[in-house]
Image (tube, rainbow, N blue to C red; front, side, top):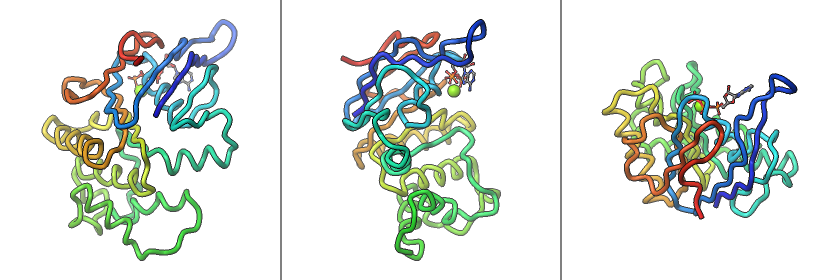
Length: 225
Ligand SMILES: Nc1ncnc2c1ncn2[C@@H]1O[C@H](COP(=O)(O)OP(=O)(O)OP(=O)(O)O)[C@@H](O)[C@H]1O
Ligand SMILES: [Mg+2]
């Protein structure tokens, strides 16, 4: 599913050049649930950005589902980002003036014109994350956990095969975190999605099938065969 070979990512030039990733190789099989751990600044977000096609300023090769991301045209790469991958973030990134259904349907905007389904797909994914009753609520009327569910529904909208989540429970209390983790685990187990989660709370993700540990831009554990 994910195959990284000797990825290095440098920020800055000359004296200020700093490696965010150093010779990272990683194998993640389809259907895995991966937790990515490591101290602040160790390269976790950078790694996720490479896998998700958000960053192309690296050396080495990154392939997802057999597609070498560097060989994709701009158009193919944006299609990959919008259709193959679903992104989930710590701060939800919802639009305050849109209700839950509209926030979720924002995902359709990036995939170009589609037949108008009258909001059916948005309702379907909101139901999948347990928010059937909150279609018309704006973010200001939702709890943190509910906001993250809306964000996950938006990530699911275009039927991705891979979920990339960067500290999805970083803004939530322990109990709510547990519910979000159960949801991510269910998407993995029941819907067959491959899930990669960056987290500072590794023990909460105890059911992960693979733990990748980064230290100073290097994978020191869990890079896979
Ligand atoms: N846009 C950027 N410009 C310059 N340096 C950057 C940039 N993004 C990241 N870095 C540097 O790359 C290194 C890795 O950053 P990254 O964001 O991947 O760490 P992280 O493990 O996600 O940290 P955190 O747990 O704090 O989110 C850090 O030293 C960071 O300062
Ligand atoms: Mg980060």
